[in-house]
Image 1 (cartoon, helix red, strand yellow):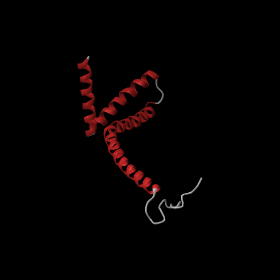
Image 2: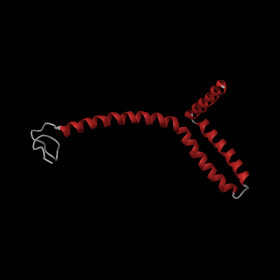
Image 3: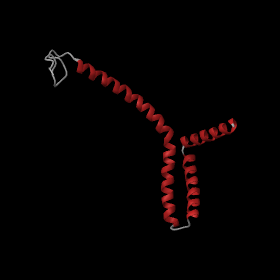
Length: 120
């Protein structure tokens, strides 16, 4: 394998200071990276704005169910399951209703249900 004597291995630039193939590839990769990171941020921002009410409600339900388990202790399985379902529904509803984005999510969920019922 022969080395090209006109380009420096350490810098990727020609001895006269002009960029060679490695410099051009580096510049192109940098431009693509900057553009794609900006695009990913926009996508992620929309995703987190949409998903954050549900993530927050799920975390609150998890904490509430852990507290309910400590509070109730040992109960019959069906009783514990029913109590957990009621607790989860109440906590999720309260959390989603308390957040403006959660209210929008509930409204969209309700409209989706209406559209599905209307289409059948």
